[in-house]
Image 1 (cartoon, one colour):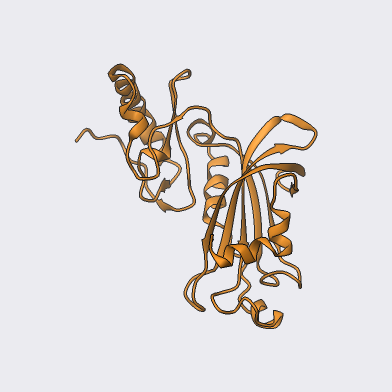
Image 2: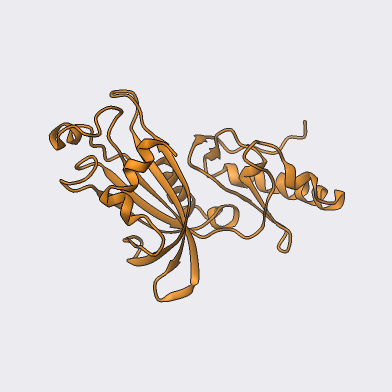
Length: 230
């Protein structure tokens, strides 16, 4: 674990992102979610003037008062640029940004599209906040959003190999190929496609014969694309 991650966990914001803590979302209507488990922490700290520095934390959650309502959540927190963590608040405040995480942009785009709920996880809610004067970057973004996990088998792993896909019977692999050919043109109508797309961006629901596109932390704009057999 990096020393910066250890430092983040000791801050007020870091301490609030632990199992058992509650996060409130505001839109499209207020809701409260209890953190079940921290699944991933992704750190991006850059030199001053390069790109925005931030940490994102992915977790599983349960809606407070509704134990049957489960969701995945990610929180993006702006952090100080490299070597400015212990500068005065006025110095860190100058780095403040109100940028919207691209992952949230993607989910909001899907929510506005009739194709979204058919081919991607469904956005549950979100909150776009600002850090207060005692924050890591006063005035910087702290954005939370949740989505419903899609049921099924992820067809690849994070190495890019389609491990799970090739372990299936030939008949089911052919069925997945057929559904992909039908789904791909409809999905691209939404104008978003995962960057470095691979099998791990696909989840196969064998019961419903449905294929979902997942993971949109980084994505590229695309135009509607008809399927072409190569």
